[in-house]
Amino acid sequence: MDRLLGAADSALKTLFAKPRAARACPVVPADDTRLRPEERRHAAALMRVNHVGEVCAQALYTAQALSTRDPVLRTHFERAAEEETDHLAWTAERLAELEDRPSLLNPLWYAGAFGLGLLAGRLGDRISLGFVVETEKQVEAHLQGHLDRLPASDHASRAIVAQMKDDEAVHAAQALDAGGVELPAPVKGLMRLAAKVMTTTAHYV
Image 1 (cartoon, rainbow, N blue to C red):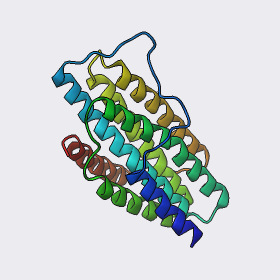
Image 2 (cartoon, helix red, strand yellow):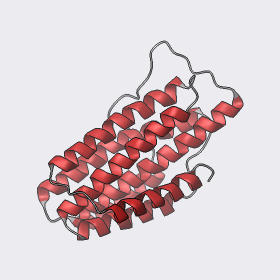
Image 3 (cartoon, one colour):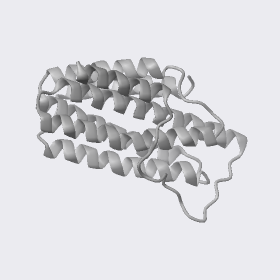
Image 4 (cartoon, rainbow, N blue to C red):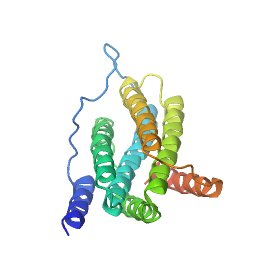
C-alpha cells in the first residue's frame, strides 16, 4: 500500500506540481539567446516534446520501481527518476521562458508510459532494465535530432538538451551494467513507432 501511495504521489507531483531540480540549469556563459518570433515558436515546440519525454520518464521509472521485488533495483529506478526530475524542471522552466505551455495531453502520456513500465516490470527485471536501455538510446538519438533542429542562437535550449543527452547515455549504461538484456527488433520498432506518435502530437498539442 505504501508503494502504491508513493506512485500516486509521484504522478500528482509530475503532472500538477512545479518540479524542483537538484542541479542548476545548464547555461552557456556569455551567450545571450536572441530569437525571432518564428524561432521562439519552433524552439518552444521542441522543448514541449522534450518536456513530455520527461513526464514519460517519471512514469516509466515509477512503474518499474513499483513492479520489481528487488529492493536494490527498486532503489536504482527511484534514483533514476530523481535524476530525471532535473530534466523535467529544466524543460518546464525553458518553456515558460519561451512563453509557451506544456502538452495538454500530459496526463495521457503519463498513463501510457506508466502502463508500459508496469508491463516491462512484469516481464522480469532483466527485461525491465533492457527496456530502460532501449528507451534511453532512442531518447538520446531523439535529443541529438533536436540539437540539429534548434535555432543556432537558442543557446539556452541547446545547453539543456545537450546535458539531457549526456545524462540519458549514462542511464542507459547503468541499466546495461545492472543486467539489462537487448530487446527483440520488433519490440524496438514498436517503441520507436509509439515515440513517433507521441512526439508528433506533442509538437502541437
